[in-house]
Image 1 (cartoon, rainbow, N blue to C red):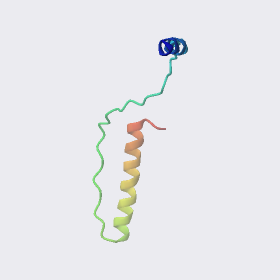
Image 2 (image 1 turned 120 degrees about the vertical axis):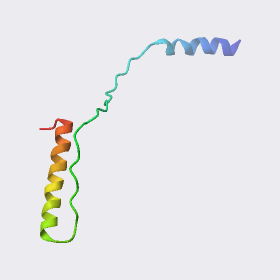
Image 3 (image 1 turned 135 degrees about the vertical axis):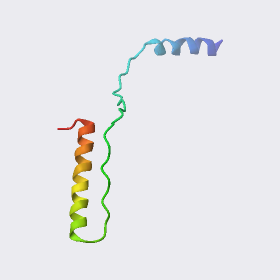
Image 4 (image 1 turned 180 degrees about the horizontal axis):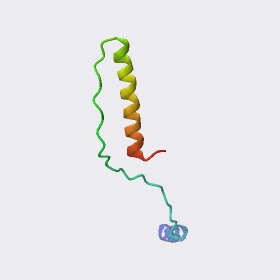
Length: 68
């Protein structure tokens, strides 16, 4: 009998409903193609081409994410 009355007392506290909202990120598919990575042979020109490649990849990513 004691446990029944105890459960009735504590069940009154749990009856209030609380709504909790949470921001959820939805993944989107990006149809942009990644440019081909240039070959690395240690020369200045290959390093320059690699730098240009990384700038193109960054620009492609920003286009996909719509970041200004």
